[in-house]
Length: 502
Ligand code: HEM
Image: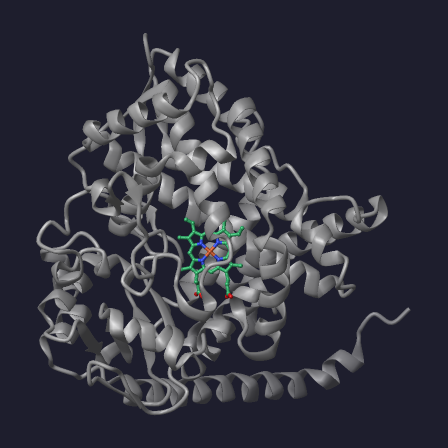
């Protein structure tokens, strides 16, 4: 037996040299990229907005970055600003939004910077691709999601989740002495169960508070959070090096994505064995035309991301607004009393269509608190926006639904007020120009789950409002948002729940 490994000894200096070369190369590459980054973004820019951004002095006057952007955009005569330090042109001008999302859609793709950031989690899923791959998935998904049957199927799933889990959970909270509950957490669990059932035909049982939180939900949460945090790094090179060396948050992200992949693969295999032709879930529908397992995984993971936190976010701010506006809550109850039977707990599809005031209230709450507060594209070529703003090739161009909902020039002097009636004409809901209200995006890439999201939000809102009084524990505390892909309130939404008639 050899006591000493001579080969290791011989290789040692070589290995050290290799590591040294690799290290030096990485550092040089990092410095070079930082230089390019610095030159492009102009961190020395001395304009007020850039200085405020770099010194965080905006925090003195605003709770949220989106509120500060709203202030800047309202002051700008064109409704557009450019933050040099971020290389980001931000607009609240509906004419520009139409131009970016429709007229020159070809010049404003999602672009590489974002598809790289989200690529490990989303792969080639619809949310993360441009060009042919997007067009193919969009066509297929439009066909699947556009049908009346799939909307009915979504309502059935949501109704079952409300009846068997949400109502019992809120009732049990109402009957406890300390009846405070984090409503945001409840809605996140609710929407994760719903979107998993809808996408995979799988029930992660997140809303069963007596069960441990599903491994899948935890891994998915962590993977989305860490992927979004990549965008906060001062330069992409930082997270790319961490990924290369498999350290820190990138190591955690890899672990979380591996778990998401394992679970997604298991589900795909189960579905294949069970036979999918008679199933309604999206995975089964896509399986009928795609037999590449990795592609199927990517498609479905995009749907989870698109449909989960958005709905939870929309419902959370809806209840925050409602708790400050009891008159809107009463109007929703009165309208539903006219359309639903006295003891009817859950609403039917036909009845939902007749609830114009409820629809207006949901639209109005997302005007003030859109779940996706801003969304960016990258200019492929130099261009000039309709308001005269010059856009250099490669610039990030962001439209900002949060700011747009608060612009006097778009919504009038009462733009900051929560007024569902602004959406009604003679008691009937009248939609607005989608480029004025791009909450679901607009144009060629408009959200594919809009109708399903609205069915889900309205069913939950109505079921809860009819049976409970929900009061926010600290109604004077305006929401403070955590950074991320979807608006999430820091610290959740603690509420008191009381059963009506108690
Ligand atoms: C209130 C809830 C929702 C809001 C506010 C919302 C908003 C949005 C927005 C702003 C986009 C554009 C994102 C981008 O391109 O960067 C989008 C895209 C998308 N949404 Fe939604 N969404 C909601 C719910 C849903 C649900 C429930 C589903 C699925 C059942 C869904 C499926 C999609 C898909 C597949 C896309 C990608 C469309 C494409 O790229 O062609 N969404 N959504």
